Image (cartoon, rainbow, N blue to C red):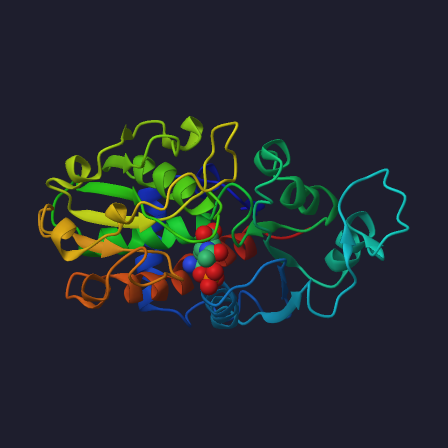
Length: 319
Ligand code: AN0
Ligand code: CP
């Protein structure tokens, strides 16, 4: 595997899940693979889980790890070519990326959507430059349009808990005070369809996701209807995708918060969220603390999804 940014990079999902479960039972069985190899993790945005789980996965494989928070101590980076750099940005991405590449063997990048230019975001303007100019295998630690390490961990978690061959999986929008990217729901919809589940996406009017990511899922605008007979409920906020509202908050409707009453409409569904989550905005305390909540094992599986991805990159040999 030379890059990991999309579901298509992982190949057959059932094989990837099998490998994940094997790795989970034998985390330290591949310690020789990463010997004298260095992972560089570049964060343009905050993180708790991705930072810890990916670093842990790399250590399980015997790798060295360097973490750079671009906004804390590095030079401010210009991303536009052709700009006269007489403002506050001291360095251009076009130099910074190959320099970063020279100090490592694998690069992980976290770079959220700007939510200002849909074209730049959906062309993955930052991530694609890392792929083009670093000379090293690059993987997404959540970029503008996707969060594949999260979706892979979500699939592993569903596979561990499902009791039907084809569970009904509902991705529901929920309110949030700040505008958030579409990356997590895009990847979740795409990966769960690829896994062969019965996928329903529920969101208010105006919040439909890019149909390239929801292809194969049923999109509805009535949350109660979607929740009926659900086996898994995955809550997430996202900002609008459709123009003219791209990146905007169109609704804060509290009737979309996932409550115990909402969960009672399901077939005793499990509750999932990628975290971080705002309690009593996205989901109530009783649901997230309840016996059907998977948020903690789901987060723990981030170590496993990251380890499979790094393992495959290391196994494929590097430039
Ligand atoms: C981010 C998002 O919604 O994409 C990261 C989630 C993993 N969430 C926040 O910024 C709160
Ligand atoms: N789920 C997730 O990616 O969390 P962090 O933003 O804390 O890394």
